[in-house]
Amino acid sequence: MNNTITQYKINYTPDDFACGACVTDTNRIIIYVNSYFTNKLQWQPEVLLGKNVDTVFTKSSKIFFQSYLIPTLLHEKNVKKCNFL
Image 1: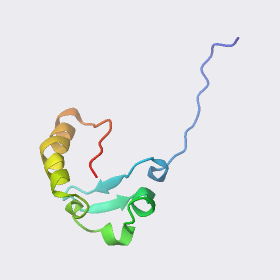
Image 2 (image 1 turned 180 degrees about the vertical axis):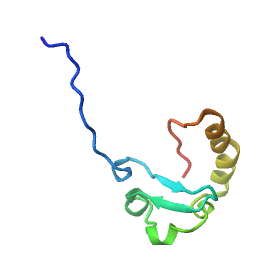
Image 3 (image 1 turned 120 degrees about the vertical axis):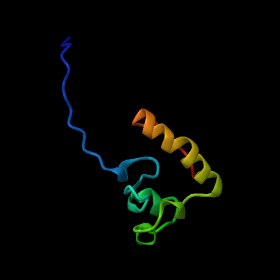
């Protein structure tokens, strides 16, 4: 039995994620959404791109975003998983 580790090159994009991926700039303007937004949430990218991220948040999601997600990102520099829609 060979115990060597073989390196694999993984090619994936945010469209391969099993959840929504929304990227914003520093002003919270949406600059990218993956296909999950179109396929599962019925949002068309052209409706979201260029809009403030608050467009997709419910009131409770905004509270979570402002009171937990952003402080965690600023402190920890990452978040493992976050469901807020």
